[in-house]
Image (cartoon, rainbow, N blue to C red; front, side, top):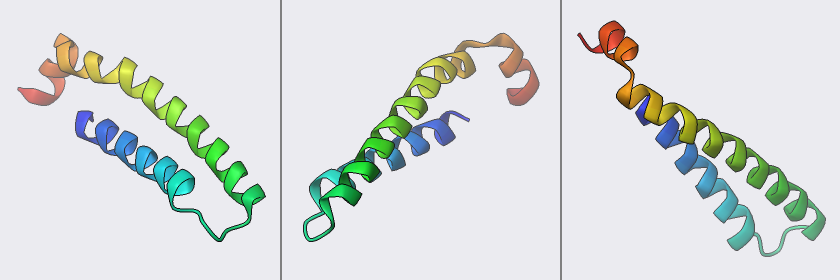
Length: 68
């Protein structure tokens, strides 16, 4: 799950960077809407990762269920 959350955050960062840096020649309104949605998605994914990654790393319940 930790790898999953890190991967999702990385993909969202790449999406935001792609929309903000490499969008020349596209309709500015389209780029703006896409960038806003991508930033909102990054915020949601990042907040989930900030909450759940530490939980998966230190939880005894997770360790007992999935590791051993």
